[in-house]
Amino acid sequence: MAFTLHPTLAKDSILAAKVGSLQVRLVDDARFFWLLVVPETTATELHDLDEKTAESLWKLTRRLGKALQAHCDADKVNSAAIGNMVPQLHFHIVARHVGDAVWPHPIWGNGRAEPLADATKVARIESIQSWLGN
Image 1 (cartoon, rainbow, N blue to C red):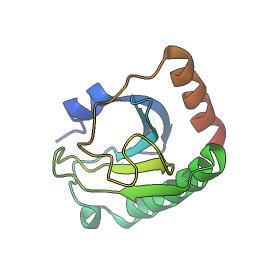
Image 2 (image 1 turned 120 degrees about the horizontal axis):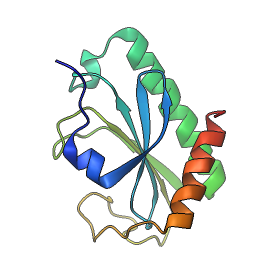
Image 3 (image 1 turned 180 degrees about the vertical axis):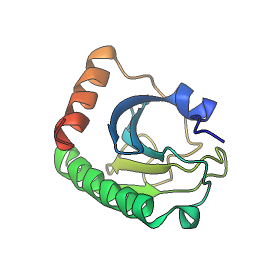
């Protein structure tokens, strides 16, 4: 079975970059600087990944988390792979700030997404690409 991006991930995020077989996607929600890393695989669980992909995912997640913390002056960077609503394996990395739209609660299921303005979308994608050396 070939990789196909889950329709919810496709609807809610924009491809910002690719690192090997990993997609880095920007979630279209102005309330948070929110990234997804999606391995282009049919595996649905972290423990089902081959070692090379798992290692690449971990390294990229750490790199993006550090970049978000520095770039956004985040109070906390949340990183998680939950997958209850969207079964396709994907990893969230979100810059959080004390006093943000839902602080201190989880972002999932809290409030409504606010679409990114075009200029913000472009600026964030350029930031992501610069962090990755693209």
